[in-house]
Length: 369
Ligand SMILES: [Zn+2]
Image (cartoon, rainbow, N blue to C red; front, top):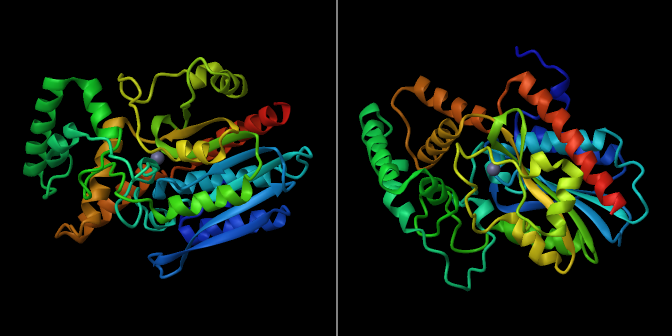
């Protein structure tokens, strides 16, 4: 029996448990909950998959704070705990008269429930917010490294050969090109990593409905999309995508601290890649001309290379691969789960503490804006 501490009040161990904790918190705090049930998919237990939205504050408010969890499925346990901690803190009980808070729980409920990064179509939802009627960006480098990232076999021999291929590619092109190539998103290899899809995912379409309903008429928008993976263990790592000399950038520095917004850690010495198809960019486009101040905020789990290796295993298992040894399979699954949301109590306590502070700073900033 695992000893359960205070963090267990916020973290679920399954999607169903996280969802129930979130909905209970919304109801007890007097928020309005709406559920968008997935039409095609169910959880590993056969249970309902849904995106659940909790709204606090006045309808028609001109200022809003939108917070997302579970864009990358299995990372959602931490984002969910952050949202629940925000509700339980009491900060939403007395909002200013024209401020509302919109919490979107489990944006990719399939990945959340199945402890995987991508959607039911192996789509990285945070690369899927594209205009698919236009030509999609090419990523020829990805096609070169795909066989090394995603070998058919997960044996010592195959992995050593893949590593030699990667090392050679990096020696030829450099570390910066490597980071850019593997992280920016790709639209040509549906069974690969960071695949952005060839059409808008259900989660993408549903978020547009949620934005249309809950952010109509908003002029000033604060925004956080909670993730895990990049950055130092248990510490927040901000990815702010506003123009560097813009008022939105300055405001983010004001709210959350310049050091956090302008940090350059997180990519093992490389500059931040230029991503395609971010959720945040979709929300910004749908709410235009509203001004948006916000970021993707990560909580660090593993060093970058180990994190990448866990995503490679996550993807390998997804495509019907199973090691012969059941113990090895169990170890691989536990590794990917722990990479998304570490079970360590101290890590979880840190997330609740940091998230509580960051969300409150966002709310105070928005209220004073
Ligand atoms: Zn993520």
